[in-house]
Length: 382
Image (cartoon, rainbow, N blue to C red; front, top):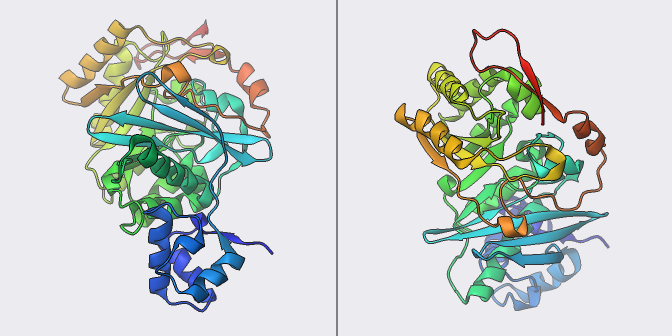
């Protein structure tokens, strides 16, 4: 008999499951707390549940974590796990400890179909979407492992970023129940301001998220014009920058923060010139989108053919933005000694999209001038 993995349910889903067993809603709340707040997977441990319910659960349900293939700990305290999601696929999650927070970077897909040039996951190709239970299981495991590992009774993970493997908004149906579980006070009780969905710009789903489950939003921008962004983030060909910024502005009406974070990966000689920074300023000013920029040092990997921008150039780029009144940060690289830094998560994916061949054909990035007056684009072999 097939049993239901209770990690697949948010509280509403679990209440409906309990009703099918002939149980009242408050039993679902009790069960939800046992699973997520206490990390219990054995129904026999759930002593305040009626014995009759525990017996029903034993034959109809399970709490199934993802098998851990490997665990690596960085010198800076960052921990990366590789989880087995079956059929030859594995995904990665990363815990980043800081003085005032503990952040978990969570994957939403086995691989990614967007195919951004600078992202190691994109070069792995795409296999499938994760289920709600597989997304939630990364947080469930990490939170309760870390409490034991660090000897703490209180919550360890205060922030979740959907910035691991995959494009979260292309797995919307599984994402939203997982987000609701993260936010639920009977589970992890995270603030909407401390749960971030990162997207490369799936415009219709940005609008849906604003209505269904608004959390903090980070947008992978990476270029100040459509010509360059088409090369770096292929999804831009479907949802160009103007449409994306309009969606961001609409999202702000629902968002828990009063700004959108624009992620910008600094690529040597590609998107890191002062003209690019000035065009970014023009772009956000004309759109009216309240925003901050997070400049990300690129983490090179051989298949990309790209290099990290030198630090002086990154700082000069940041200065242009910040002196114009745009809050700008340069992301501190964490966990790069265990390949856990931004853009390095690759996991192990049974690719169904022939990504390697497609990416190899895109080794040349066309460098379009930032200035609108410049006429002829140059090509530079990366």
